[in-house]
Length: 476
Image (cartoon, rainbow, N blue to C red; front, side, top):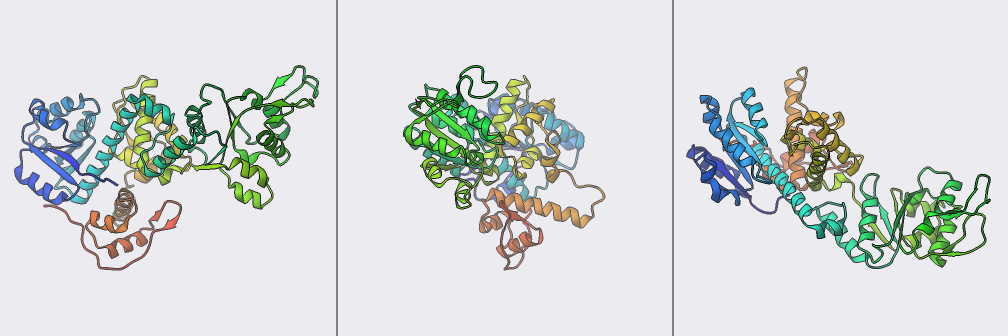
């Protein structure tokens, strides 16, 4: 969802076309026109514009692409330059490939479908905003430190960051919930770094899929001779975290036999090593994380209620990536820059189909899966742009070109589904706004949603019917 007008710099020598497109784009866009393809003559527009819409139609028909390509090259030299969308005549594949090589964000065939053009410009704007936000966060050591490695501009993440800022200085226990791969340990580390214990150790341990005896030894340590093979005294992780922070991941997997010992650490601030009767006092802050529902486990008798209430002083929920899709371009660009620097690559951006594939994928593995996908794409990339074929098969499958054995009706259906789904996501699943963006009646949009089998994240069906269809608007 874009709350402010998108500034479009339209470089074209066709005044009739620029006027027609400007009128058709309507609210949400501001534009300025230049008929000069010389970069030096566009200095007053560089700071103002969010997107460059470059008319290459005359170049593509007459075969002289050099002025437009030179302008693209010059514009691309600007740090965090605005994305360039190119208007062309016909399906000239060699020209399209050349435009992509010179850094075009996307191409649009004349006459442009106004619905698709609006979506492409809005997506390009979000991409540019993500690039600028990543640059701002990298330049701002304060922001980067306060949030550690967590990134997110979506409202739900901003609320989470605000809560973390409030509770970090207060020495209370925190329970972090969320699916695997959402970044629960990163949030725990951010809280520790913002707390008064930041100069003391943060000791992390995962309780997942380990025998009870091993977990007990890891947490509380043992005395020499406590069991066969215990040749020396060993300090546990709880002791190592003294005066600092203890982070226990997958706390829902902690056995019922060990839960009383952890409860004693919280209540009495003391414990004993295995094979010892001597009490050891500790001063720790406990942060726990789980992807399980602990309140249900309490009701089922699988987790102690007294321990649950001790852990759950402040509960923080990290949403899955599919519920904060506005953050996908930001996170993807952050990972792209990180891996590009790490692997000494010159990758700078995602192609429009690749970014669309990232945004439309459900991300069952959440941010961790996105990070791995971008890492793979950067490794495979040989130019400045990550293309869709460099993404894992599961991610690109929904955005690959239709197969030639598909019927005409099926190809049209798939195109409609992608267009409607993308618009709904752009508009935050608000159907009235989506209908206005698509230029159709709301009742027709309801029928399309049902016919095309579109469902919102979390498998919740989107709604019903009403009203009469109205054709999609297309200029020219």
